[in-house]
Amino acid sequence: MPAIEIRDLRKSFGRLEVLRGIDLSVETGEVVCVIGPSGSGKSTLLRCVNLLEEPSSGSVHVDGVEVTDPDCDIDAVRRRIGMVFQQFNLFGHLRVRDNLTIAQRRVLHRSRAEAERIATENLHRVGLAEKADAYPAQLSGGQQQRVAIARALAMDPRLMLFDEPTSALDPELVGEVLAVMRSLAAEGMTMLVVTHEMSFAREVASRVVFMDGGTVVESGPPEEVFGSPREARTREFLHRVLEPTRVSEAEIGAHASAPLAG
Amino acid sequence: MADPETLTTGAEARPAPVLSPPRRRLGRRQRQRFWRLAGYLVFAAVLLTVVAAADWGRLADSFFRPDVAGEMFPEAITVALRNTIVYTLLAFAFGLALGLVLALMRLSSIGPYRWFATGYIELFRGLPSLLVLFMVGYGVPLAFPDREIPGGVYGAVTVGLGATAAAYMAETIRAGIQAVPKGQLEAARTLGMSHPRAMVSIVLPQAFRIVIPPLTNEIILLTKDTSLAYVLGVTATTIELTKFAGDALNTQVNPTPLVVAGLLYLAITLPLSQLVRWLERRSAKER
Image (cartoon, rainbow over all chains, first blue to last red):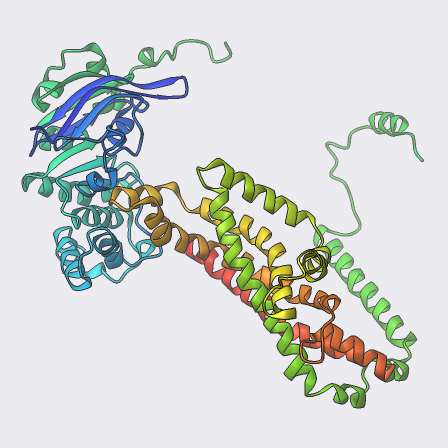
């Protein structure tokens, strides 16, 4: 049974169709990276998995439970799905330790002692045990994102969703977050990652999915998608992302030779 | 009145002084200094005139008679100031509780809740506090003689002033809730919290942090509004500062009690407005 099974998923915001029939399944233990230009529907797809967005049609199963079923207890399903956001979304009024314990205590009804033990364990996992008493605002972006990962892990999730986890970070802070994610992948965590970090996708993903215009254009092992992409759209995107300085004026419709006052 | 058209043509006719720099007798800094000095001088002149013209003996006799002021104590503090504070706190507590409920109703996904809250807020923001107080103190008891608001004058002031304050605080709290980034609620829901649980544990604590300064302002406004309580026919034990000072004014035939009451109000409101300022500075630093 796949960890995530998405069938003919469609999502519209008003008249704008963001997802136009997505089929995707993620097996337990797989790391699937979703890449693609902005506006291609990657984040919406991810947010449909735990129903932060309500799909317009189609079905999503997580661990065999249909989350798109109106009678599904979504809070129960979400407990098993960790999610990491672009903007970290740490609870600003709580110390790091309480960020990790509040849902354990209020949702899983763990005792304070147990919740704190698990919190400390997971802060160790992301290398921030010494920051337990800090407030989120006192941490760097990279540290905040690592705490956010630890917060999700403290709930013992069956799978993790990452929504552009490094896009809001200063370049020098990206590495520490990717390192944590890499070690998670090595431990066998099932991960669905929307990312712009191509080297991470190439290195860590068991499968890469390229999305454009609300559809899956191409998917396969990273060496195939990056090494010999079948689709022209994939090639064009990778060219622009991997070699941004090589993009010519002609490709973007600029005319360097044209007179300035045209 | 100069005709604007002649002004423009006049300006156009003059050769533009582009090349020769304009010559002025004073430099920019000197001119600044001159006007600043002029400002001080005008202020000092007005002040001196007022001081010289004032009849100081008469002023002291009217507004600062120690014997008249002395007559007011200790009741001014033990009864009047105490009641003013009690009325304020009761009305604030009532208004805060009702305001929170109204704010949540306004943000509810259930239409009738939103409509009711919007109607309530518009109604009570549009009515004078005095009218509401009359309604609670006399209107409602007339309509329902067999029932009464518990607590006598205390109850009536609590409801009468609190009902209006609730409308203002509801809007403040709603703005505070909406100022909490949407991602906070999403993160909480993602961790498996129900919507109510996420509101109580995550959103409201942060919203209240944001609205503490405006809510403190609301206490200041309420403190002053408690002076309206006299229309409910307060007695010797339920009297508040303004009525107390007014009574003393009548018996002593001297306005000193008004000054004393004013100072006592300031003793409450000045520290509070300092507190607001401090809270605002602190929250500005956090961001």
